[in-house]
Image (cartoon, rainbow over all chains, first blue to last red):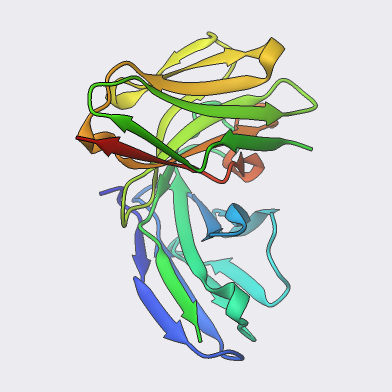
Length: 116
Length: 116
C-alpha cells in the first residue's frame, strides 16, 4: 500500500458527460501529480500541484482541469468526455520539494475510466 | 526533447533465467533515468534511479540497471527471475536537475512474463 488513495476505482460514464476523480496523497506529501495511462499513448504526465498551486503541465487537454485543496487532496475534472478518454488515471504524491534530487513518487492504484 | 524507447512490449523468460529489459533514451542534456514497476491492479513503484552518481544502479527486488552513455541505454537486469517479478516495467527519463517528476517522460512499458 503506497498510502495514496484514489476514488473511485472504476467509473463508467457516457460521452459528453463530466466526471471528477479524487486523490488523497500520503500524509505529509505536498506534491500531487496526475497521469493518464492508455494502451496507445502509454503513461503520460498530465499536471502537477505543489501545496495548492499548479506547478507543471504536461499533455493535459483543455477539457480537463485539476485543483489541489487546502487539505492537500486533489481532484481531476474531465468534461465533455469522449471515447478516447477511456484510460487508467493515476495520482501520485511525493515527499520533497519538486526537483529535489531525492524525489520519489508514490502512486495510487488508479481510477479506471470507461467512456461508452 | 527527451524520449524513451522500450524494446519489446512483451518479454517472456523462464523462472530462474536472466531478465533483460531494454531501454534507450534520447536527451539533449545529461539525463536522469528511472525504472518503475507496476503490478496488476496497482500503481507504479520506483525500482531504481540513475542520477549520475554511479553507472551501475542497484534497486529493489534484486534488479539493477547500467547507464551506458555511448549507447544511450539504461537496460534493466535481474540474474534470476522469480514468479513474483511478473509485472509491467516502465523506463522513464528526466532532464531536470533533480529528476523531478514533472519532467518525467515514460516509455510505453514492457510486460514481463515468467514461465514456470
